[in-house]
Image (cartoon, rainbow, N blue to C red; front, top):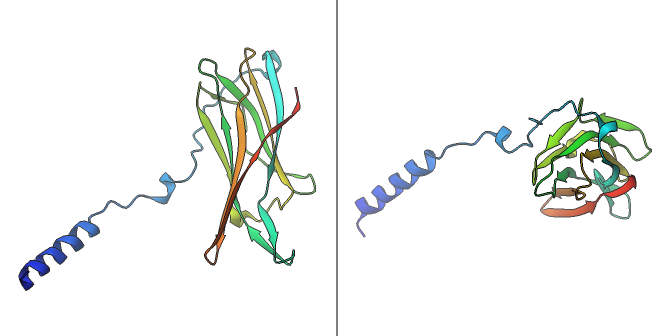
Length: 171
């Protein structure tokens, strides 16, 4: 291969790499464009309160150091036909103090839709015993949603991730 062919190939490669569209970070962040509704929860046929354990950090090195984690709460409507409603998503720290209310008013999830709520690793709230409490309901005796949390973190080429499942604490 001649020197001019190699140079042309390098110029074209640099050109195409430089022309890649940069995607703004906001496109990767969870959507907060919720589908708000004015549903009256006392009129819903099915209602539940769900507890979801969250680990915003965990202990490492015999408990002498904390490893910060990002936690994503995922609420998934498993019904093929029914809309579900979420009335509250509240975040509590390790000693039971509510630190954040994620919703000002109820939202709805269409069949098979999902919604997420994030606790960033740099928020420094919650701790190893944190939790979410989610109030949800539906107009019919529909299937229960899947409500889980995914925790993930990395530091110095060390990564960790795991999932926790919600449990019904009140029907």
